[in-house]
Length: 123
Image: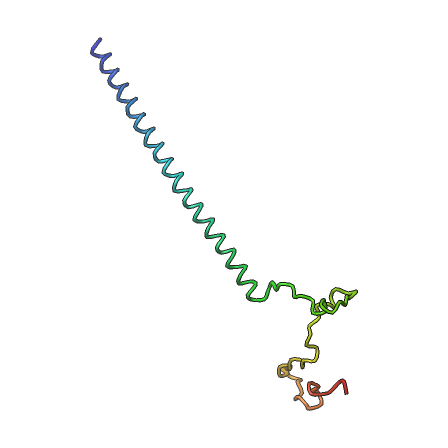
């Protein structure tokens, strides 16, 4: 019977040693996973920040978000009642863009009468 008890004790000791080895491997694996996850998270955050800044620069460069222009009449001391009028473009006498050629089945040819871009409206 003592031989049987010795075998059981050896099996129990081996099981405890295996459990301890497995626990150490799991702990090491979890620590490694945490460090890799932290590194990947930091890299992803840096990439997202870089892309956000790049998108903001591209948006501003493309003219989607124009910074507000300073009021050209502020130096004159004039104030407008309507804030929309204070940011009116300064080049009011620019010729309108030329329309593209007419299309369609009933399109008539362009005549000189229809072209008002050279007409002096102020005279």
